[in-house]
Image 1 (spheres, rainbow over the protein chains, first blue to last red):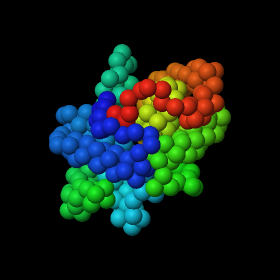
Image 2 (image 1 turned 60 degrees about the vertical axis):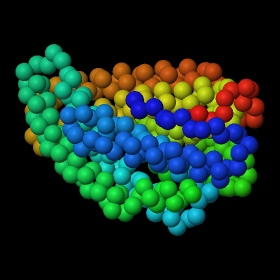
Image 3 (image 1 turned 120 degrees about the horizontal axis):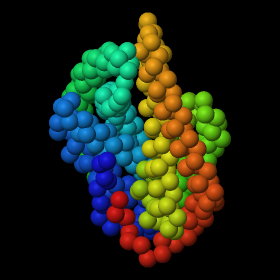
Length: 153
Length: 158
């Protein structure tokens, strides 16, 4: 499981706003650092790692919501959610496939049923990958990374 | 499941004050969702509890350094609940898929039986874990930790 990256020293009595900037900056960086290779269906851990990073970013954005200007914050949160949803859809296929492919000691009919479900899931995984590719592209064209940097500056 | 809104957060105040408010609300949210989730068949309630556990876990990852030692323990518990309920959810997703097949056959039925049994094991693991967590007065101890000083632990390295 992807570990959260260590932040520089924050103290409990630091201003909430300053903590917001520091935390969201680090969490945002982690997301984009994990974008490489997420569309590779032979290495499903990459999607998982990016999804976890996106969840952590979203959690940070929600925890520090009052510290940011409303309009850009809401748009960014919405875009992060869309990215998270696309990652989640792909990840769900990966998890179901891993479960079915990990089954052992199947009776013949059961094995055949598992194969049929697996084939369907593979198709869905490919479709989810297309959705994810579009979401990544949208995030890039929408300058999500740059907007996040601006939010915390 | 929408997170409860939180009033009274002051961006210009100290982090610890804001964190205290938010953790209180998220802790109550989680604890309020447990009872309905203890019904073994309540898949939607278990899903909501998993989301609440996830929220509290990620929140404590960011803020536990502001509080007494039990905050880190609570984070571990939230993570554990999230994982166990995730196992239940994974069974539910596959079972829904199998039940939804247009022409159920004996092979699908065998898989349904297999995953139903697997779900029972996963639910029991969650139930057992919650009993232990509740047994150590999770809610009260976490809320108490919010008013305790961090006691010489390093500052935030999340």
